[in-house]
Figure 1: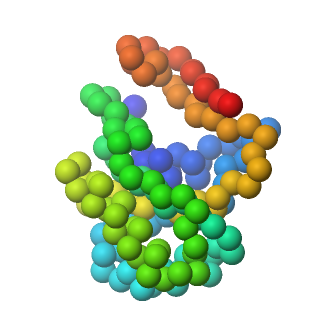
Figure 2: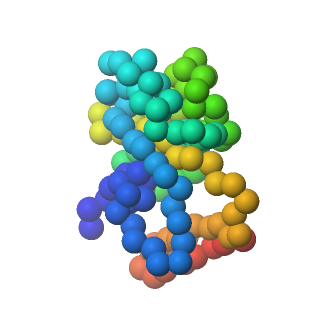
Figure 3: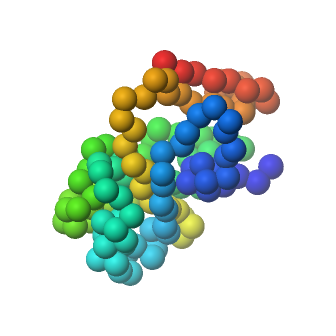
Length: 137
């Protein structure tokens, strides 16, 4: 089984009766090279509040899951360049111990008034047994 990042999985998922918030992602190494470039892209792509999230290959693999381990920040103003850069830097810092050159940052628009939200998994979190588990509220 080939594992991908959270962002790559979200881009490729096909849902009939649900929506995944608009997203944009990029490699940590690219952001470090040109922070202002990515802050400007985010400013142009998003009109309202965003979530800034980790998207690391170490979050899910065959041996261990780091799902929920790294920092995420909600309700960030996409027009505030300094807030964008400092928040992304905080997410990158949370990746440091388990970082990879392939790690990404995931930017998603904030959901407004959801009717339902949840998480779908393809294996049992305790045993690793291969079956679907969906938690929602």
